[in-house]
Amino acid sequence: MNRPMRIAAPLVFVALVLAAWQGAVTALQTPAYFLPGPVAVGRAMAEGAPLLIQSAWTTLRMALLALPLASAAACGLAVLLTLSRLADAAIRPVAIVIQVTPILAIAPLVSIWAGIDHPERAVIALAAVAAFFPIFSGAMTGLRSADPDLERLFDLYGASRAQRLRRLWLPSAVPYLLEGHRVAAGLAIVGAVVAEFVSGTGAAQGLAWRILEAGNRLQTAKVFAALFVLGLMGVAVHVVFQALEAGVLRRWRGR
Amino acid sequence: MTTVARLDAVEVDYPRGRALGPFDFRVEAGEIVALVGPSGCGKSTALRLLAGLEAPTLGGVVRAAGKGETAVVFQAPTLMPWASAVDNVALPLILHGAARDQARRSAADALARVRLQGAEGAKPAQLSGGMAMRVSIARALVTGPRLLLLDEPFAALDEITRRALADDLHGVWAVSRPAIVFVTHSVEEAAYMASRVVVMTPGPGRIAAEVMADGHLPRPDGYRASAPFRAVVEQVSAALMAAMESGA
Image (cartoon, rainbow over all chains, first blue to last red; front, top):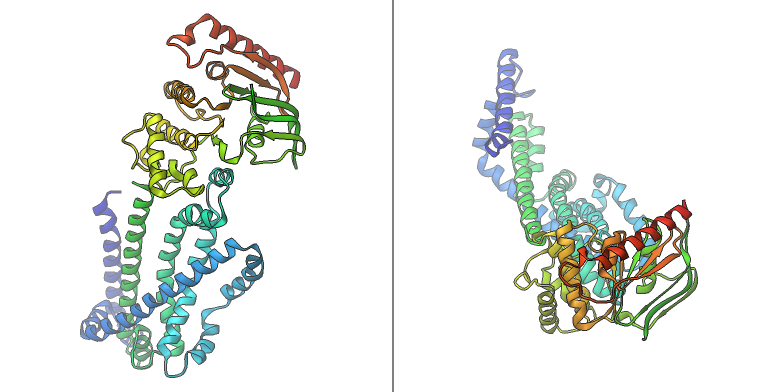
């Protein structure tokens, strides 16, 4: 499929869905609190634009602050577990327990530890937890993905573990790390929104707050407006990280 | 002549069965030996024993060439995809603690020896299969090894590239004369490359026959069409055929 088609196809599809949606809402005369039409949602987006953009930035900022924290922790832990079999045996099962625990379930704890006056810290921490695992598992897989013949070559030349880590394992892990970070960026946004639902963000109100507020007031068009902004933000982050991944991979491979 | 490496009645057993042996083998300084045998006869296992990358289940391995003096070329070029040709070749020196600049200078020299000057900055993905294998050979040569082990290095290449690389390998051998053990399943390649051809039985590999090939290396032009070459090829083929029949 050529490039214009690839870009046009989803746009046409969305336009068709919106048209059908508007048609159904008009024909069935559904009440606005139950299901507003896309025109009403568009109006809510336009009217609420400054507030929505501000809230989107708040959510995005917390997600983007969480990402390097998650990255440092995940990569650091993965390197430690790769270097030490004992640490691997001791820590990996614990990591799995944390992985299968829903973020929602640990949110109250994190809120308490972050302090009642710093809900944004809790949100960043929870977003970091959400972003941690894709990076961690990518790093664990990547650090063990080196060509076995290259490992033999390093054996032959008597390489130390530090030399192996620096010259073989870490470079071999690059494609896995890039993919992990792309997935993690999306999850950090999800994590930030979920965390805000639970912890709030205090004075700095994110998109989750907009959704809650509008929902409580039965302003359904505003709920949709915030959801659309959230969706757009997710897509934008995905596109940026995908481009970043492709660019770095091109350099890594030399083409 | 001094023996560079020797396998004394070695046997290698894997969980799925015996892979090699009992097998006696030695390689003298400066000679090129080809190991020929059917797939799964333990040629690669014998090579790993000679490299010190594996220990035998039984028997002894004597290696006069130490770890730093042994180099291996695998069937695939086995290059680091993220590193340029010169950095790939410099790797053994870097691992031995050489300074980066010195290592890269030596690596550039080694690349020139395999006729790859100008390709220093290219990454493996930008190289053809034959060029990538040349980089791999340059990496093996960069430490000035006394023992060079090649595990079916040309198996994935087309015939013309194989022939060019065979002559290139003779060319670099003529300069520093390392002992070379060359594993292949091509009878012609064995007869062309080596001054001595060791024929192995199907797995578990043992020595079926030893054929002395023409000792004049590098080969003159037109050697492949010469009667002595054809005679060695026929001799090795017959030995291989006999070994396969006795094993089957």
